[in-house]
Length: 240
Image 1 (cartoon, rainbow, N blue to C red):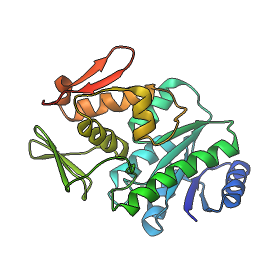
Image 2 (tube, one colour):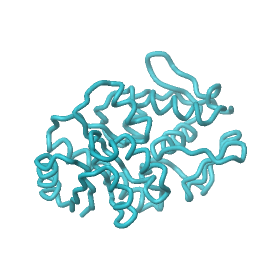
Image 3 (cartoon, rainbow, N blue to C red):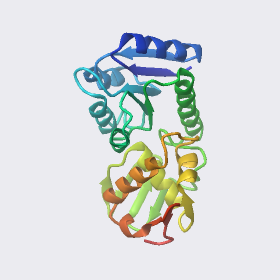
């Protein structure tokens, strides 16, 4: 049984979501204001957050940014819900650290399936003593992974570049680690979606491109070492 924080100001939608979550065996809690989210999470941590974009007080994009900025909530999976279907809105949510994106109107069964997929990954990672949101397929022979000037402290979920800490979202962290552990290989966008996101992500391969662009910006060595394979995917060179 997982605790799901449902952030939705429309009572009928919140009730519908809660109904299906309860049927799936979860415990939902509804919050109707964006400003109440982070304080509530600090008081009572959630296993996953369903976050509407259009909220009173603070919109969902700013809430997502605040969740990722708070160390105690940074690793909590965030699934955004919105009536906006344009690519620019989806990309903006992903850039701010959202793990998933569902456009209204949505199928409640699909929503529950997405929630279950994220929770399974989190449970498997926890069983291995992995970091928040970490997929079970990644290998760790020690607590530290290095790639040129980049050092990944797996246990503390921290990344440094030339000794300075780099602030990555949970999903950016997982993508970077996967790329480093598969350095030298050409990886398709579909494979990255399956192995890093952990299931058949329906948001499209643009999701991968957004996250690759963000880690290139945050870790300058990747601007050269992480190359784009046209119309296919990406390859991280053996050495930077």
